[in-house]
Every structure is written in C-alpha cells, then in structure tokens.
Image (cartoon, rainbow, N blue to C red; front, side):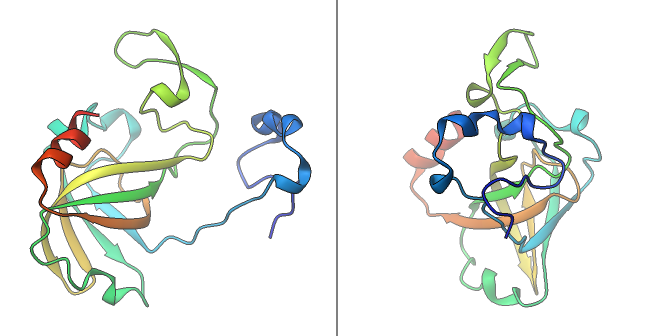
Length: 166
C-alpha cells in the first residue's frame, strides 16, 4: 500500500496538486491487478483509430493464469465493455488540445489516453472464444494494454447504439 502522501510510479506530485483540496483522510490510492492483456496490430498511440465505433481493427485478449473461467457464459454475447489501463500514458494535463481541431478542452470532455487515472473503456465486438482467449474487433487500444475488467452487453439495441454514439 502506498499511503496517502505517496505517488504511484511514473506520476509525480505535480500531477496530484488537487490533493490540497481533499482531506488527507479521504485520499486513497487504489491498486488494480490486470486480469489479462490485449494483442493486436496497433503498435503505437498514433495508430489508434479516432472512433471505436468505426474501427475494424481485430485482436485478442489473453487472460492470465487463474482467470481461465472468467469467460464462461459469454457465448451468445456479441459486444463487451472492456476496462483497461493506458500503459503508455506517462502524464496528463487538465486542459488538452483536441486531436482533430487543436481546440483546448478539459480532459474529461476528450477521449485522450492522458487522463488523471489512465483508465480506458472500449465497446468491442466479441468475435469468438477459445480456452482463455477471446477474439475481439473494433479496437481503439494499443497492443499490450493491460485488461482490468470486462462486462457483457446484452442484446438491447437502444442501449448499444447509445454507447456507440457517445
């Protein structure tokens, strides 16, 4: 455990200047252990498609030992929500330039990987299952991205199209 006044690796105290407004007793460091890793042909951040809803990039997620049973019951699910860690993100700014227009925006109004907690969320097409591997399509993440969690999207067309347009 880090303690309330320590900083995770690759994030310095200047990135956590918001702590002055939070009581030390209320501040906590949360540690996650990845359950698997993504494999795909996207090798760098510049190659990531701008919109996951138009991406046709395919890949697979391998689950680590001990997590083999987590995909049981995903048969028949066509889309999943994947929570992952932006492992190539080293720092962030509260204001960032929008990729297409260069307009300065708050980080929470952008899909930038440079975020306060470097956590990403993607909606992916589930293409197949085998052993402890799932095959996915519609990727907007980099090869080697650590996977934190996965949720099924049940067939409710209204909710899926709402997710895709967001």
